Structures are given as C-alpha cells and as structure tokens.
Amino acid sequence: MSALKKLANKFIVIEGLEGAGKSTAISYIDKWLALQNMPAEKIVYTREPGGTELAERIRDIVKMEVQGETLQDKAELLLMYAARVQLVEHIIKPALADGKVVIGDRHNYSSLAYQGGGRGIDMALIEGLKQLSLGDFTADLTLYLDIEPELGLSRARGRGELDRIERQAISFFQRTRAVFLDLVAKDQNAFTIDASQTPLLVEKAIFTQLDNWLASLN
Ligand code: Z5A
Image (cartoon, protein in one colour):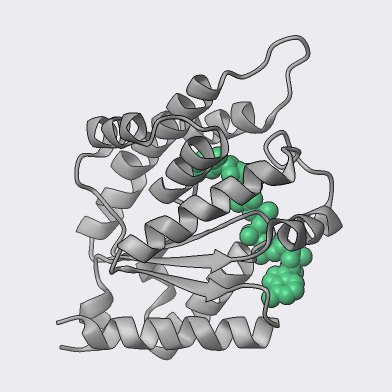
C-alpha cells in the first residue's frame, strides 16, 4: 500500500510538557509528510484545549486567572473534556472520515498527565470521563517529547509570560511528566522522544519514529 493510503485517516498526536518543543515538532512532521508527497490540503492541525470556536473560548477560561475565584481542579478537568468533545466531533472525526491526516498538539494523555498526575485527580475517574465523552476514540500515533520541567519552563519563559498552569510548582510538572512516561510505556502506539537534544537531533528522532511507524502499517 502507498504511504499516502496508509496515512489517510490517521490521527497523530504530539504530547509533552510546556517548552518541550511541540510546535517545533509539528513543523518536522509537516516536513516528513511533504517527503511522503502528502498534499497540504490533506493535513488538518488541531490544538487542545481549543480548535473550534467554543473550544477556543474554553481555552481562554482555562488559561486565565480570575481575581478572587480559583478554577477548581475538577472544573478544569471537565473543561478539558468539554473542549475535547467539541474538537473531536466537529473537526477531527469529519477530517479523518474525509481521508485526511490530523496532527494534534496535545490530546487525551494531557488530561491524564496534568489533571491526574499534576492535580492528583483519581485516574479511574478521568478514564471514566474519557469513555463518557469520547468512547474508544484514540490517537493512532502519539509522540511524547520528554523534557526535564526546569528546562522546558525556561524555554517557555524565554517566549513570554507564563500562564495560570505554567506558574505551578516544579513538583506539579514532575508528577505530570511521570504520568506521561508511564502512559507511553504502556501504549504500543506511543513513543518517547528526548526533547532536550538539539533541534536537529529531535527532528532526526521524529523522522525515525515516523518511518518505523509507517513501515508497520498495513
Ligand atoms: N492542558 C491540561 O492541563 N490538560 C489537558 O487535557 C490539555 C492541556 C489538553 C495548554 O497550553 C495548557 O493546557 C498546558 C497544558 C494544559 N499548560 N501548561 N502549562 P499551550 O498549548 O498554550 O502551551 P503548551 O502546550 O504548554 O505549549 P508551548 O508552551 O507552546 O510549548 P511547545 O509547543 O511544546 O514548545 P515550542 O513553542 O515548540 O518551543 C518552545 C521554545 O523552545 C521555542 O522558543 C523554541 O524555539 C524552543 N525550542 C524548541 N525545540 C528546541 C530544542 N530542541 N532545543 C532548544 N530550544 C528549542
């Protein structure tokens, strides 16, 4: 089967802590897809939370700080899934059904890692919420960019002011990272990339993972 046929209807997700280089990695995936002769109009990009008009409004709520009112951890979790359902139903599923490849900047593992690991919400509750909102829908391939929180945050800081979640303590991101690593270790369709390497080496590692994955598809 040709590479283009194999890639049709595939959902590729990039995960990682802030400053891991997810946006940069997406540009490498783009380059790799161009090498497979994938037409630009066959590629759809998403980000989470966000990606539809309503989901982008939820993103604003999640990122903002409101004087005198703390966003409760469970409210944060519910907002993440509310945004995700909107995105999956309105953008991702229709694109996949249309034979497109979708590249997601974050997806479900972010909720398990940030809200489960970082905030300490019961993982079984999050799994239940995932089932309720998305059923068995899942990424075809997840590339997790692994980075020490200190390094990631220093990169993110270099880009501008940190938002509400980015201002959490380092221990929050350490717990988040531990869950990401655990999830990837248990998922045969997920791979870790060492994001502390130079951009050139990160690009090379991503190309290798994508080549291997493509070769494994029937
Ligand atoms: N969140 C959640 O809690 N639960 C959920 O379910 C979901 C999300 C879906 C979304 O933030 C927030 O929501 C996020 C998790 C939470 N919050 N936190 N904290 P976002 O999408 O706005 O931001 P982000 O996901 O944290 O991404 P980012 O900060 O934009 O980082 P990035 O995309 O991974 O990195 P980048 O922009 O590609 O690179 C960052 C800088 O590093 C930039 O200057 C690059 O030029 C540089 N860079 C990139 N690669 C390298 C290498 N290899 N070496 C050196 N420098 C590099």
